[in-house]
Length: 237
Length: 237
Image (cartoon, rainbow over all chains, first blue to last red; front, side, top):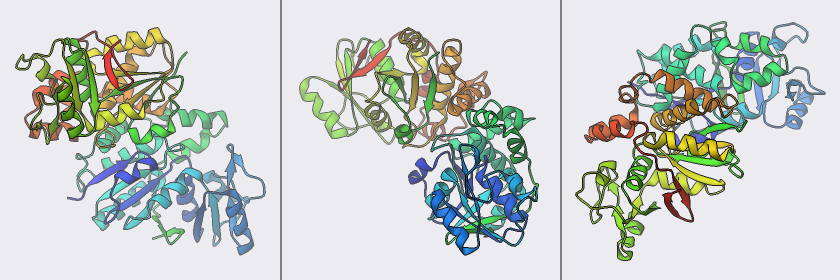
């Protein structure tokens, strides 16, 4: 039975073997939730950047650009980091490529390069990701983007929720991180949004009136898209 | 109100500010549990080493030596890593100094050097540690030794149990790690030993018939000693 492990921070990735395994990169608030939403809305592919300047420069190649600074859409780009930017119709996104800036998420994606496949996970596509992982049948490592490298509750809850869906097909008992995430996911029932309201990151978001984003990012199975990161770009598998 | 944070692995310590704070180093199975037991039994001080050879060399200076390899007492030393070595009377320890080898614990102690004070914590002395932290009144970071740098349940549970005791006096809500540890400590009730039987590390210990150690290491408030690590040596404050 393939194993299921969770890496709580990109800083801990050197302790994990990714070769021969599938990495599921997750940054629930909000990078990977936005990526899943974007591809589900017909975005052709996305290229993640750490630096705003690199992201902006992609406009010259016909890319839409998405970036945020201090919780608000950055200047001189088309979209912020909210998934609603891909839903509200203000900027038409279908058929477009998007360059995105995301510090934590980009770092997690790049540090996962050694994995056989890098899947982008979110609550929004958790069922589709689970199906894809079952099909691949390889060992799984969930890579939590975290908050500036620190442990964060929302990515951990995703790891627990995914482990709960895969308990019949994967060994979810050999990793203390997975055992903890499963118990935290259990503790968060029946209302993960209410549970997360106490988390430090969500309170930061609340401060910026982004509570609506948080509730959306916790919806499960909104989309069936499975984005994978290959050769610098993210697209649906 | 001073803050209470938990660092789940020594690998994450670079993300934490230790200056001006108190570090509580914990390696429940079994380094810090054994240190607390040893000092409570009248050991004068202990010097931790990463390497067995360095530890053994201290015998020439009149130290008792304690080390373990693959779950059993190493050859050519006086004690293993079990707290019962300080209790069973086979080797008289009162009034002696002890050199100990502990990979995870030593690393955590040394990496915590920037803290204002480094306290050695275990369930065995958790109440005394809590009182000491209240008296100091400074921000606290619990440094989990982990298992080869990885997240482990038993050290996390200690962090949650300590946070639960200090909720009235410290801000235990600003760190997602502390929030998670509090919930895991809650999930582990009413029988933390039964809860930990499922953890990966404990199953490794079980394999080596060290279940008795585990149950002892989870006893709370057996001892009132507060060991601190200063200038390379651990002694009661």
